[in-house]
Image 1 (cartoon, rainbow, N blue to C red):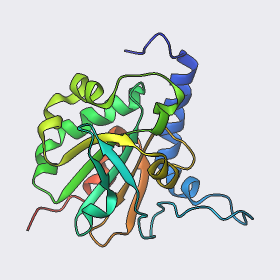
Image 2 (cartoon, rainbow, N blue to C red):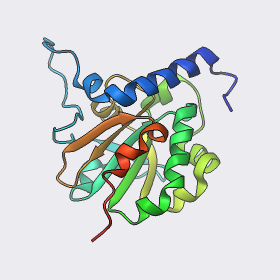
Image 3 (cartoon, rainbow, N blue to C red):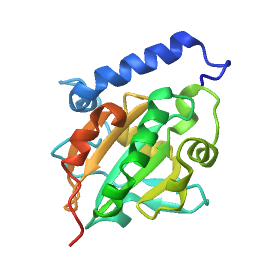
Length: 191
C-alpha cells in the first residue's frame, strides 16, 4: 500500500524509472563522458567495486571489503517504493536458491530514503519478508553517504550491483522482481 504522504505521481515516476533502469543501469552509472570534474570511483560493470561502509540494522558499521572472496549483491532500496517491496518478496521467493549459493545480499536503505519519509529498514523487512531478517545470506542496513555516492550516484530508488568474488562488478541493474533471471545467472552452488 502506498503511504498517503507520498504523492502517487512520485510513486509512478519511481516505478517507471526502475523499469527503464533495468535495461540501462550500466550506462547511467557510467556518468557523462568528458566530465571536467573528477568524481569518486563508482561501481560500474567491469570495474573493481569501490570500498565503502554501511551500517547494519543492529548498528554495526561494516566495510564492503569484508566480503572480498565472496559474491555479494549490493541492493539499495527506499522503504516507500512499491518495486522495492516487490523485489524483496522476489528474493524471499528464491530464498532456498540463494541459501544454497555463495551469495550475500546486502539490502540497504538509500541514504535519506530517497528524500521521503518511510519505515526504517527493520520495519520494512519485517512487513515484507520477515524470514529474511534471520537468514545469514541477507544483511539489512542503511547506506552511508559514501556508499550511496559510489553505488548510486544518480540517486535511483531501486538499484543493485552484483559483485563477483574477485571484487569486480559484474552486473548493475534495477528492480529485482523484473530482473531476477539476470541475478540467477550468478547464483552458483556452494562448493
